Image: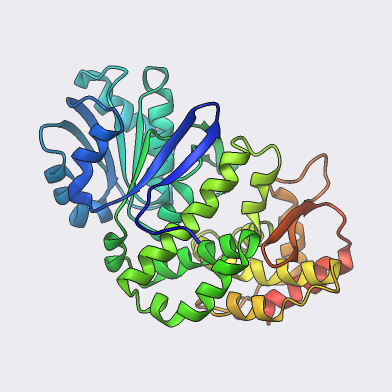
Length: 363
Ligand code: GLY
């Protein structure tokens, strides 16, 4: 079990690594200095929702730094080429150099967009994530995936850009809207399911405290979930193999988002429903694996609407799965479990298996 006071290291071997530091936002300047960044110009990218609450404390915490501040509209639409160019237009005339850090203050959209800007400005500026959503603290700020959306689909333009530092203040999660909180819980549960039965047991026992956002419980939960993600990406930075297990429930979840219309379900809600399907698929492929307890945990993740209440049908979902990024040469691939904490990718899935899996998401 990881100790929640410690930094989480993302370690790629051969000396390449960075730390996730768990500290109050007020410690930002000290954390940047510890990470070897030189005080001077910096770029802060955030959005209209986060700025109202956290931009003041963050810039206050920057002390003698000289920030260029870019506040973009909140929402998925901001992960666009247009918003990327707004960043370029604000930053390039502002006297930056290759030591100028880009600080992404926000959730997944801000992190992915600002990260892509950092990767491309002057062929690479140091990136610092200051994640303010649960999904960002346990998932999107870790592992270096950055990018923007295209009209053809989400996350289709991007690269890997590992941050220099990730600064996590779990206190900021206290003000997160309930929908975003619940959405993040889906990724937390997913991390437990794919890699760590002890974390599953912790979530099971602590669930009421988690829903009530008990501060010490949240801190422990975020630290633990982040440690799991850090270990997975440390082993497989570019998703050549093991990293794909982080997509557990996502092939189904992405199909739900596509069919329901983006925004009808949050990403986390779709993943929570997708994990019900992925677990049923797992139990069909591994009849000896009893998924009852795991399924009970997944069903505790709050989801607002059932699939049937949204008029969604299995055929449309089956069809939508073909667009998944894991499809290789027309063959669909799925992350399944063969036991608690034991995930792998397979393409040995029949149409009957898939129908049964989808049925579970409807229940
Ligand atoms: N969110 C999945 C990954 O980072 O690989």
